[in-house]
Image 1: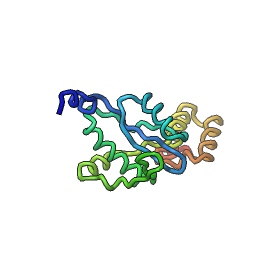
Image 2: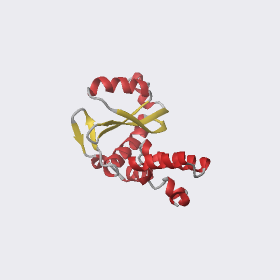
Image 3: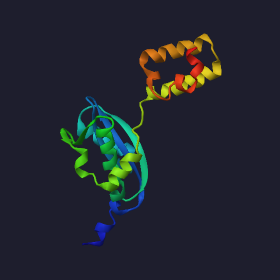
Length: 165
């Protein structure tokens, strides 16, 4: 093997980002990159359909080190969030096929990031605490309840039990 082969960036220890491309229909592609902007532009061209990018975590290491985290995140997306995992455009894969004990151990530590409306309950709780029992605070709470934002365990009513009085 030539020396050039060992100078590839895959073997260099550097910061790597683990991200998920979220498509309509509960489909998801989990991957890793060292440059999020480049990854977004490359996948935008390759996939040919709109998606949202969700940065899951970052790690410092080689490609191989980050690969274990990548497969663990795929498992979490499939088993805990119900996503169909895409290996390439149009190809559905089973995340369990490449799991081993070390990857299962990593997956047990991970929690899929909650959508913004789940975190809205905490924000509304803070506003309620600041504004007291003003009509504006109650108006915000009522709007959030209609959208289902307060159904999360960290909602306004679980942090401030007096909020429903």
